Amino acid sequence: MTRFIRAFHRWTSMIFTLTVIANFVAIGFLGQAGVPPLVTFSPLLPLFLLLFSGLFMFVQHYAHRRAGLNHV
Image (cartoon, rainbow, N blue to C red; front, side, top):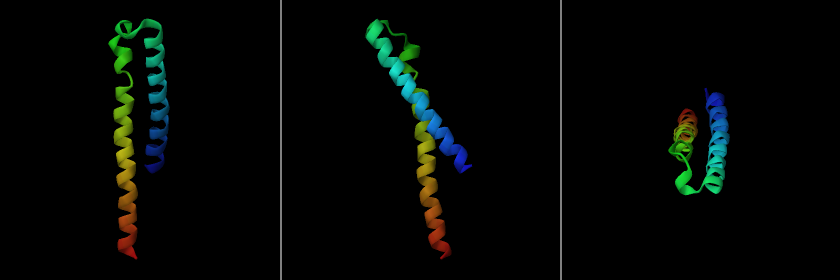
């Protein structure tokens, strides 16, 4: 499960980066008013997925640490 979450987080971060770059390119070519809302808001879905997977990894790290300290 941990390997899947890490891989998911890694690939989602690449997708997020590409959507942000696409957003800047579209704004550069079309101007702010000419960019469709789909392009403008496209980075939000990967961003929320990164938030949840990042929080999961953060909590998981400290939960494993706490469980390890309790068993010693």
